[in-house]
Image (cartoon, rainbow, N blue to C red; front, top):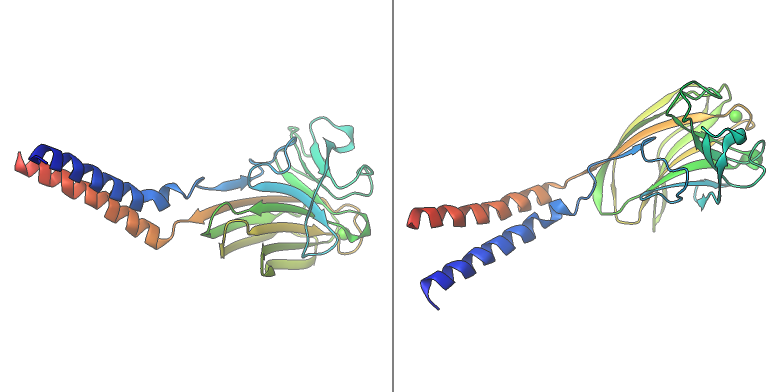
Length: 235
Ligand SMILES: [Ca+2]
């Protein structure tokens, strides 16, 4: 094999090795996930997000019914059952340009339902990573509610944040580790009856690149860079 062919082989070997090491960075996917931006009136799940309900903190059932809240076209909603107007938990978004039902324009609200049924927004991780989870359950309507942030894995459910019987806004800033398929649940329970329990939620979920990924990426790029530098000197 002549010198030219050796150079080509060496270059491609360095490039492939470099890209292989950079790979973990590319696999991180989206930089962040945001509610209410990612709410969908037509999809459940919508990517990593899904809209559901439960009678217990350790379970989750996707809401099967989509339709406008109280028949108002600018209030798209998901429900657990058809009797949504009075009895069913729901997750909905205020698309109007005015406050409605104590929910600000653009906010997504969780409303628990009859029989102590909780309303849940679930985010399912697409990858193994550290997470930053920052958000707020807003005061919304005047009813007292229970709010939770839970992490559910194959090993069970862990409470990351909870406040019971609150009529006020509750902020959270959390970090945790997840594997692909693990779920982060944002839950609103009725606490003392389910009337006037609208509770808006905003949350930003940001995967944090692992130091080993950053180091691997730097080494990979350095491999390619060193090769190109050597090529420049030998010309
Ligand atoms: Ca209540």
